Length: 302
Image (cartoon, rainbow, N blue to C red; front, top):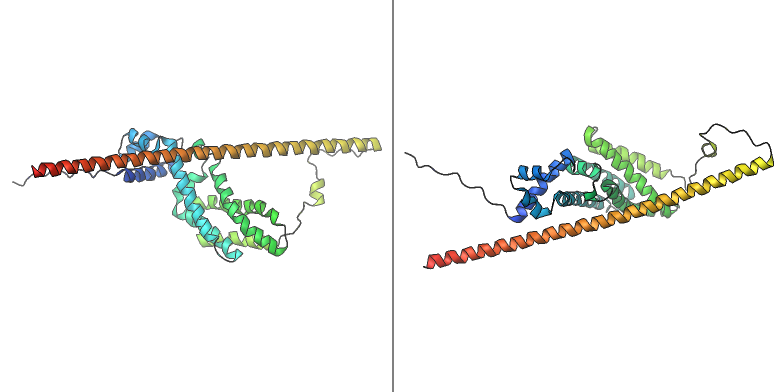
Protein backbone atom coordinates (compact mmCIF):
# COMPACT_ATOMS: atom_id res chain seq x y z
CA UNK A 1 0.00 0.00 0.00
CA UNK A 2 1.39 3.40 -1.05
CA UNK A 3 1.89 5.95 1.71
CA UNK A 4 -0.65 8.79 1.81
CA UNK A 5 0.98 12.17 1.35
CA UNK A 6 -0.67 15.40 2.38
CA UNK A 7 -0.78 18.24 -0.19
CA UNK A 8 2.05 20.71 0.18
CA UNK A 9 0.81 23.90 1.90
CA UNK A 10 0.74 27.08 -0.12
CA UNK A 11 3.80 29.31 0.39
CA UNK A 12 3.01 32.39 2.40
CA UNK A 13 3.59 35.63 0.53
CA UNK A 14 5.86 38.29 1.92
CA UNK A 15 4.42 41.73 2.63
CA UNK A 16 5.75 43.23 -0.61
CA UNK A 17 4.54 40.25 -2.66
CA UNK A 18 1.07 40.51 -1.15
CA UNK A 19 1.00 44.25 -1.82
CA UNK A 20 1.90 43.75 -5.49
CA UNK A 21 -0.72 41.00 -5.82
CA UNK A 22 -3.43 43.29 -4.43
CA UNK A 23 -2.37 46.09 -6.78
CA UNK A 24 -2.54 43.78 -9.83
CA UNK A 25 -5.97 42.45 -8.86
CA UNK A 26 -7.32 45.92 -8.07
CA UNK A 27 -6.01 47.28 -11.36
CA UNK A 28 -7.96 44.65 -13.31
CA UNK A 29 -11.14 45.21 -11.30
CA UNK A 30 -10.96 49.02 -11.53
CA UNK A 31 -10.43 48.80 -15.30
CA UNK A 32 -13.42 46.50 -15.69
CA UNK A 33 -15.87 48.00 -13.20
CA UNK A 34 -14.55 51.41 -12.22
CA UNK A 35 -13.96 52.72 -8.71
CA UNK A 36 -17.58 52.69 -7.58
CA UNK A 37 -18.25 49.26 -9.07
CA UNK A 38 -15.35 47.64 -7.21
CA UNK A 39 -15.51 46.75 -3.53
CA UNK A 40 -12.95 45.85 -0.89
CA UNK A 41 -14.78 42.54 -0.48
CA UNK A 42 -14.25 41.72 -4.16
CA UNK A 43 -10.57 42.65 -4.05
CA UNK A 44 -10.03 40.52 -0.95
CA UNK A 45 -12.02 37.57 -2.31
CA UNK A 46 -10.12 37.58 -5.61
CA UNK A 47 -6.82 37.65 -3.73
CA UNK A 48 -8.11 34.96 -1.33
CA UNK A 49 -7.37 37.06 1.73
CA UNK A 50 -9.50 38.73 4.38
CA UNK A 51 -10.58 42.37 4.13
CA UNK A 52 -8.29 43.46 7.01
CA UNK A 53 -5.28 42.46 4.88
CA UNK A 54 -6.31 44.99 2.21
CA UNK A 55 -6.92 47.66 4.87
CA UNK A 56 -3.56 46.90 6.44
CA UNK A 57 -1.69 47.53 3.18
CA UNK A 58 -3.64 50.46 1.77
CA UNK A 59 -6.01 51.81 4.42
CA UNK A 60 -9.02 51.22 2.17
CA UNK A 61 -10.21 51.16 -1.44
CA UNK A 62 -9.20 54.80 -1.95
CA UNK A 63 -5.61 53.99 -1.01
CA UNK A 64 -5.15 51.14 -3.48
CA UNK A 65 -6.94 53.16 -6.19
CA UNK A 66 -4.55 56.07 -5.66
CA UNK A 67 -1.54 53.75 -5.98
CA UNK A 68 -2.90 52.18 -9.19
CA UNK A 69 -3.63 55.58 -10.77
CA UNK A 70 -0.28 57.03 -9.74
CA UNK A 71 1.62 54.08 -11.21
CA UNK A 72 -0.22 54.33 -14.52
CA UNK A 73 0.32 58.08 -14.74
CA UNK A 74 4.02 57.75 -14.00
CA UNK A 75 4.41 54.95 -16.54
CA UNK A 76 2.78 56.95 -19.32
CA UNK A 77 4.59 60.16 -18.40
CA UNK A 78 7.93 58.33 -18.47
CA UNK A 79 7.21 56.98 -21.97
CA UNK A 80 6.20 60.44 -23.23
CA UNK A 81 9.24 62.08 -21.61
CA UNK A 82 11.60 59.59 -23.26
CA UNK A 83 9.91 60.22 -26.62
CA UNK A 84 10.41 63.99 -26.27
CA UNK A 85 14.16 63.49 -25.79
CA UNK A 86 14.66 63.28 -29.59
CA UNK A 87 16.58 66.10 -31.25
CA UNK A 88 14.26 67.08 -34.13
CA UNK A 89 10.81 68.50 -33.40
CA UNK A 90 9.09 66.30 -35.99
CA UNK A 91 10.67 63.17 -34.50
CA UNK A 92 9.53 64.28 -31.05
CA UNK A 93 5.92 64.57 -32.22
CA UNK A 94 6.07 61.21 -33.99
CA UNK A 95 7.61 59.38 -31.03
CA UNK A 96 5.23 61.01 -28.53
CA UNK A 97 2.20 59.91 -30.57
CA UNK A 98 3.63 56.40 -30.88
CA UNK A 99 4.42 56.30 -27.14
CA UNK A 100 0.81 57.04 -26.21
CA UNK A 101 -0.54 54.43 -28.64
CA UNK A 102 2.03 51.90 -27.41
CA UNK A 103 0.93 52.51 -23.83
CA UNK A 104 -2.73 52.02 -24.83
CA UNK A 105 -1.84 48.81 -26.67
CA UNK A 106 0.30 47.34 -23.90
CA UNK A 107 -1.53 48.75 -20.86
CA UNK A 108 -5.17 48.86 -21.93
CA UNK A 109 -6.39 48.29 -18.37
CA UNK A 110 -4.33 51.20 -17.09
CA UNK A 111 -5.55 53.55 -19.81
CA UNK A 112 -9.18 52.58 -19.15
CA UNK A 113 -8.68 53.53 -15.51
CA UNK A 114 -7.15 56.90 -16.42
CA UNK A 115 -9.88 57.90 -18.87
CA UNK A 116 -12.81 56.80 -16.71
CA UNK A 117 -14.80 59.44 -14.89
CA UNK A 118 -12.46 60.55 -12.15
CA UNK A 119 -13.15 59.86 -8.50
CA UNK A 120 -12.27 61.92 -5.47
CA UNK A 121 -9.70 59.28 -4.54
CA UNK A 122 -7.59 60.21 -7.55
CA UNK A 123 -7.96 63.97 -7.28
CA UNK A 124 -10.16 66.13 -9.45
CA UNK A 125 -9.94 65.24 -13.13
CA UNK A 126 -7.31 62.51 -13.32
CA UNK A 127 -7.17 62.42 -17.11
CA UNK A 128 -7.28 66.20 -17.37
CA UNK A 129 -4.38 66.40 -14.92
CA UNK A 130 -2.43 63.85 -16.94
CA UNK A 131 -2.98 65.79 -20.17
CA UNK A 132 -1.85 68.99 -18.44
CA UNK A 133 1.34 67.32 -17.23
CA UNK A 134 2.16 66.02 -20.70
CA UNK A 135 1.24 69.37 -22.25
CA UNK A 136 3.64 71.16 -19.90
CA UNK A 137 6.46 69.09 -21.42
CA UNK A 138 5.26 69.70 -24.98
CA UNK A 139 5.24 73.46 -24.29
CA UNK A 140 9.04 73.60 -24.44
CA UNK A 141 9.08 71.84 -27.81
CA UNK A 142 6.50 74.21 -29.26
CA UNK A 143 8.09 77.30 -27.71
CA UNK A 144 11.40 76.54 -29.45
CA UNK A 145 9.61 75.80 -32.71
CA UNK A 146 7.59 79.03 -32.48
CA UNK A 147 10.65 81.13 -31.69
CA UNK A 148 12.52 79.64 -34.65
CA UNK A 149 9.64 80.51 -37.00
CA UNK A 150 9.02 84.01 -35.67
CA UNK A 151 5.81 83.22 -33.78
CA UNK A 152 5.01 84.31 -30.25
CA UNK A 153 6.37 81.64 -27.82
CA UNK A 154 3.81 82.78 -25.23
CA UNK A 155 1.17 80.95 -27.27
CA UNK A 156 2.98 77.61 -26.80
CA UNK A 157 1.01 76.50 -23.67
CA UNK A 158 -2.30 76.95 -25.47
CA UNK A 159 -1.13 75.07 -28.56
CA UNK A 160 0.36 72.33 -26.36
CA UNK A 161 -3.06 71.72 -24.78
CA UNK A 162 -4.65 71.57 -28.26
CA UNK A 163 -2.05 69.16 -29.62
CA UNK A 164 -2.01 66.81 -26.62
CA UNK A 165 -5.81 66.89 -26.38
CA UNK A 166 -6.11 65.86 -30.03
CA UNK A 167 -3.73 62.93 -29.56
CA UNK A 168 -5.35 61.84 -26.28
CA UNK A 169 -8.89 61.84 -27.67
CA UNK A 170 -7.71 59.89 -30.70
CA UNK A 171 -6.17 57.41 -28.28
CA UNK A 172 -9.50 57.01 -26.47
CA UNK A 173 -11.18 56.24 -29.78
CA UNK A 174 -8.43 53.80 -30.81
CA UNK A 175 -8.60 52.00 -27.43
CA UNK A 176 -11.67 50.09 -28.61
CA UNK A 177 -11.46 50.05 -32.42
CA UNK A 178 -7.72 49.19 -32.75
CA UNK A 179 -7.88 49.86 -36.50
CA UNK A 180 -5.84 50.93 -38.33
CA UNK A 181 -2.56 49.85 -36.74
CA UNK A 182 -0.56 51.86 -34.25
CA UNK A 183 1.99 53.28 -36.67
CA UNK A 184 -0.64 54.22 -39.24
CA UNK A 185 -2.70 56.08 -36.65
CA UNK A 186 0.43 57.88 -35.41
CA UNK A 187 1.33 58.83 -38.99
CA UNK A 188 -2.08 60.40 -39.57
CA UNK A 189 -1.92 62.25 -36.25
CA UNK A 190 1.49 63.67 -37.08
CA UNK A 191 0.34 64.52 -40.59
CA UNK A 192 -2.44 66.71 -39.19
CA UNK A 193 -0.41 68.17 -36.34
CA UNK A 194 2.88 68.80 -38.14
CA UNK A 195 1.59 70.03 -41.45
CA UNK A 196 -0.88 72.21 -39.60
CA UNK A 197 1.85 73.65 -37.40
CA UNK A 198 4.05 74.28 -40.43
CA UNK A 199 1.37 76.48 -42.00
CA UNK A 200 0.46 78.47 -38.89
CA UNK A 201 -0.59 82.07 -39.26
CA UNK A 202 1.63 84.15 -36.92
CA UNK A 203 -1.36 86.33 -35.98
CA UNK A 204 -4.53 84.24 -36.34
CA UNK A 205 -7.91 85.92 -35.96
CA UNK A 206 -11.54 85.03 -36.45
CA UNK A 207 -12.83 86.37 -39.75
CA UNK A 208 -14.93 89.53 -39.72
CA UNK A 209 -17.87 87.63 -41.20
CA UNK A 210 -17.89 85.13 -38.33
CA UNK A 211 -17.33 87.84 -35.73
CA UNK A 212 -20.28 89.87 -37.01
CA UNK A 213 -22.61 86.89 -37.14
CA UNK A 214 -25.31 86.93 -34.48
CA UNK A 215 -27.42 83.93 -33.59
CA UNK A 216 -30.21 86.13 -32.30
CA UNK A 217 -32.90 87.41 -34.70
CA UNK A 218 -31.59 90.38 -36.70
CA UNK A 219 -32.27 93.70 -35.03
CA UNK A 220 -33.46 96.68 -37.03
CA UNK A 221 -30.73 99.17 -37.86
CA UNK A 222 -30.70 102.20 -35.54
CA UNK A 223 -32.54 105.09 -37.10
CA UNK A 224 -30.87 107.79 -35.00
CA UNK A 225 -27.60 108.68 -33.36
CA UNK A 226 -29.20 108.20 -29.95
CA UNK A 227 -30.20 104.65 -30.76
CA UNK A 228 -26.68 104.02 -32.03
CA UNK A 229 -25.20 105.19 -28.71
CA UNK A 230 -27.67 103.03 -26.80
CA UNK A 231 -26.65 100.03 -28.89
CA UNK A 232 -22.98 100.73 -28.24
CA UNK A 233 -23.57 100.99 -24.48
CA UNK A 234 -25.48 97.70 -24.50
CA UNK A 235 -22.58 96.08 -26.32
CA UNK A 236 -20.10 97.42 -23.76
CA UNK A 237 -22.24 96.04 -20.94
CA UNK A 238 -22.27 92.64 -22.63
CA UNK A 239 -18.50 92.70 -22.98
CA UNK A 240 -18.03 93.65 -19.32
CA UNK A 241 -20.39 90.89 -18.23
CA UNK A 242 -18.57 88.38 -20.41
CA UNK A 243 -15.26 89.47 -18.87
CA UNK A 244 -16.69 89.01 -15.37
CA UNK A 245 -17.83 85.51 -16.27
CA UNK A 246 -14.40 84.71 -17.69
CA UNK A 247 -12.64 85.98 -14.56
CA UNK A 248 -15.03 84.00 -12.38
CA UNK A 249 -14.34 80.85 -14.39
CA UNK A 250 -10.59 81.43 -14.06
CA UNK A 251 -10.92 81.77 -10.29
CA UNK A 252 -13.00 78.59 -10.09
CA UNK A 253 -10.43 76.75 -12.19
CA UNK A 254 -7.64 77.96 -9.89
CA UNK A 255 -9.59 76.85 -6.81
CA UNK A 256 -10.17 73.45 -8.42
CA UNK A 257 -6.45 73.16 -9.15
CA UNK A 258 -5.58 74.02 -5.54
CA UNK A 259 -8.08 71.44 -4.28
CA UNK A 260 -6.58 68.87 -6.63
CA UNK A 261 -3.07 69.57 -5.39
CA UNK A 262 -4.19 69.30 -1.76
CA UNK A 263 -6.02 66.05 -2.44
CA UNK A 264 -3.03 64.64 -4.26
CA UNK A 265 -0.77 65.62 -1.37
CA UNK A 266 -3.16 63.93 1.07
CA UNK A 267 -3.18 60.73 -0.97
CA UNK A 268 0.59 60.72 -1.21
CA UNK A 269 0.80 61.07 2.56
CA UNK A 270 -1.62 58.18 3.01
CA UNK A 271 0.40 56.06 0.60
CA UNK A 272 3.56 56.94 2.51
CA UNK A 273 1.90 55.92 5.78
CA UNK A 274 0.87 52.64 4.16
CA UNK A 275 4.47 52.04 3.08
CA UNK A 276 5.68 52.79 6.60
CA UNK A 277 3.17 50.31 8.02
CA UNK A 278 4.39 47.72 5.53
CA UNK A 279 8.00 48.36 6.55
CA UNK A 280 7.09 47.89 10.20
CA UNK A 281 5.32 44.63 9.39
CA UNK A 282 8.37 43.39 7.47
CA UNK A 283 10.64 44.34 10.36
CA UNK A 284 8.37 42.57 12.83
CA UNK A 285 8.27 39.47 10.64
CA UNK A 286 12.07 39.53 10.35
CA UNK A 287 12.42 39.75 14.15
CA UNK A 288 10.00 36.87 14.62
CA UNK A 289 11.89 34.78 12.07
CA UNK A 290 15.18 35.59 13.78
CA UNK A 291 13.73 34.68 17.17
CA UNK A 292 12.35 31.40 15.78
CA UNK A 293 15.77 30.58 14.33
CA UNK A 294 17.47 31.19 17.67
CA UNK A 295 14.94 29.02 19.47
CA UNK A 296 15.51 26.28 16.92
CA UNK A 297 19.27 26.51 17.48
CA UNK A 298 18.74 26.26 21.24
CA UNK A 299 16.51 23.20 20.80
CA UNK A 300 19.08 21.53 18.56
CA UNK A 301 21.91 22.20 21.02
CA UNK A 302 19.88 20.68 23.85
